[in-house]
Each structure stands twice: as structure tokens, then as C-alpha cells.
Image (cartoon, rainbow, N blue to C red; front, top):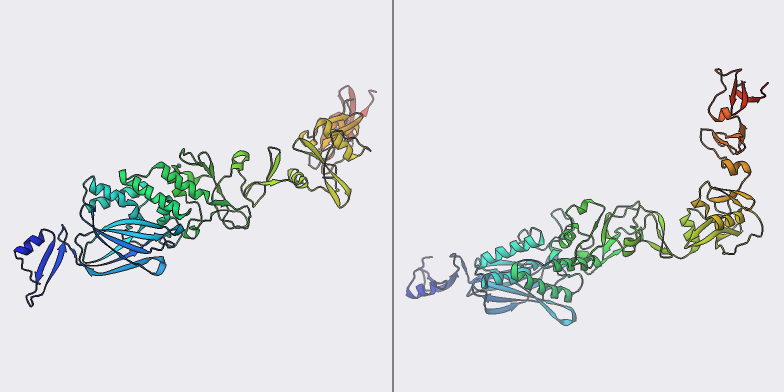
Length: 536
């Protein structure tokens, strides 16, 4: 094509409009060039709307603007749906006076209202495709500020705005002007990724919250290219509030967010996001717990804990510790404990998450003392305490056993193991708190043994109960000076022995047929046994 410029063409060239003629005909057509000499008009324009898949645009309003981004002309197109949830539009070739375009995406909202999101782009060729993402809408106000108030040209303003957004979000956007929306990495693993700005603007809560936050973000970011700590904390609070603790151990995900965006990879705690939003220590993801310290957050002072997988195959992950856990301790999968607090009982069982409040006294006592009330040696007559009251395991029959509250004016109708343990517990306290102590209940000798106060003879009262399952003989001395031993491997009865034997002096070949005096008494070694003898 051989273009010949005349005087009129020179005038038109000042505005980027060129008139060209063909050597073979008198046909003439026009084209426009930008400051770099690139032809941008007439142009065949197409575009793709790459917002999150659940957002479906109704229309796209295209505003032609001058170099100062002042609107000059506009028209509207209807996008058509494509695969993967995106939408596309195409505009036949037409002339554009300026290369600067503002795309206003119109989405339906709650209560038949509309949401509008603006994004700037510039025509760079006569066959141009534009990629519209939510990132572009967030920086549109900032581009206007840089161009209109700080006198940046459009390219500089757009580059700077994206750089500021990356810095403030703490991520690399990797070409949002060209890449499709993605909530997965290169290998297909789900994650926050392009859902990040939607979480920042609380899309998971509602359309009204999302649109209000977007407008606030756009206006705030437009001023200095920064994101306030309040906006960050508000976003984190909103997302965190959607997570619920699953106490059922069969649940695969113990702490899961369930919102309208759950399917878009907002199911789990994202450590990078909360680190950014709350200003947490970067090493928190390598610890078992971390406290939120952010005055802008409703969760200031609360604690995030890491829940390890349990035997049922539940996934590991972070969760928010409950308010009750903040008071009485974390109930994790690996913990088994009954906790008494504020006159109530709470149970944390293996493969459960969160404390369960208990009201049934039989369940409370069985869990507290690790036994089941029934007619056997370990549990029948057992006395325990709960909420400043005593309870005893008693049975009306072999099949009808349970825990009953001990009355303050309890009186025994007969002296047996149950009544003795109850009366002793009232007077001295439950045996569990007085291991191996001895007491006198009127004329009854008692020893605390096996979590019960038991009636014993004088030997067991003074020396303790003989119940030796070790390989070392136990020795003890009565107040009158007599020595006794409790044999190894199952000894149940105290047996009289000499003080020499009790104090480790053997009767063996070294002492055979010899006499020894101990504590004023004489002993003779014969047949590997010490025998007390008279002085003669």
C-alpha cells in the first residue's frame, strides 16, 4: 500500500487519523494511530469476562475515553457464556476515536438490584482481545487518580496500580490482564489463588456486602494504592466466622467453611491469607497454635490451633479454638478428659472435637473415675465427688447399679464395705485424694486402698495393706517392734520375720551357725533362717 499524504491528511495525522489511497483504485479508508505509531482503529474488539464462575454478567458497557480518561462515547453489548463459567463478547470492526476504553460489567444482585464493576484497557492493535478480571476493577480508581491527578500516562498508571496491588495483597498476580480465573495451581490442587480479592471483599457473605466492600476498597485504594488494616481484618473475620467445628469424628474435614463460595475452594483455613490479614508471625504455620493479635479484628486475643489427623482418617488442619476452650483448654482429637467448670461437667473424648456438656450423673462419674458403676470389687461402694457433692456407686440388684448422691446426714443401717467407705469419705474426704493414708473411724481401723476406704486389721493399719506384685519383698515394723514381710509375686498376708532379715542381713554360708545381736535380741543362723534364741 502506498499512502500519499495531502494537506488534509496532515491535519488529520495530528489526531492520529490517517487517510490512505490505493494505487489501483480511488478507494480511500482511514485508520488511527496512538502516540507510539501503532494502528488501533478501526478495530475488531473481543473480550472475555473472567470473574468467578458463579458471577454471570448481564451486559458490558464500553466507554471510550480520552487520554485523561474523560468519557467521550459509549455503547453496550451482551456477553455470551462459554465453557468453564466464563463469558465472552465480540464487536464487529468499528472506529474508536481514542484507544482508551473503560469496560463496565453489569451483574445481577440481590433484590433485583445491579452491581457494576469498571476496568480500564487500551487498544493496542486493530484486532484486540481484552481479559476482564476482578483485579482490574479493584485498581480502576487508582488508575484514574494516577492519570488525572498525578499526571501519569495510562501505561505507567496501569503498571504502577497493578504493582501496588500485588504488594498490598502480598501475592504475584502473574498477568491478570491475560490469564483466566483460577482457583487451582498448575498441578490442579485447590487453593485461594484468584478467589483472594473476592474474600477481601466478603463475597462469601452476600452480594450486598461484596458490592459495598468493593466500592469502599476501590475508593480507598485509589488514594494511595494501599489496603487498610481494617479492610484486611474485616475480610478475615468474615471468612473465619463461616467456619464451623465438626464434633462428629466421621467428618472428613473437622473445621470447614460452608458458604455460597465453598465449592470455590474456600473450604479450609488458608494460612497465607490469615497471616497477611491479621499480621501473624510468618512461622505460625509451623507451630501447634497461634494467637490473633489484631486490634481491628473481632477475634483479637483468640487462638488458632492445628488439629492433627485422628485414627478415623480425618484431615489435618487449622481451626479456631472455641470460647469455651479459651477458658478450660483445647479439646483436640488426642485428648481424653472430663473437665469441671462453673458447676458443670464437660467431656473431651478421643476422636471428638470440642467440649461436650454432660448432664447425666452416671456418665459424669463413670468418665471422671474411669469405671462403670456395677457390682464388682472396683466400683461397688466407690465414692467420688462432683460439684461439691459426694456420690456413691450402689446397686439395687446385679443389673440395677448407678450413682446416687450421698446425703449430708447419711447414717449407715449396717456396717459393710459400702457404708464404711461412705462414712469415711464424708469425714476424711474421698480416698482418691488420700492414697495409702490410715484413719480411725470411731473404733474401725481404715486404710485408703484402691480408691476406697477399707476396714483393715492392725497389721494393715500400721504397716499398710500387703499386696505385693513385684520381685522385691516388702518389710515393715509394728509399733511394738515386731517385723513383718510381704512376699514377692502376689503376697497378700503379712508374715512375721526377724529384724536381721528385714534389714538385709542374710542367713547364708557366711553366717552359718553364728549368733548376732540386734536391738537387744539374739538370733542364730541355721538352715538359711535366723531364729531368735535366749541369751543362754
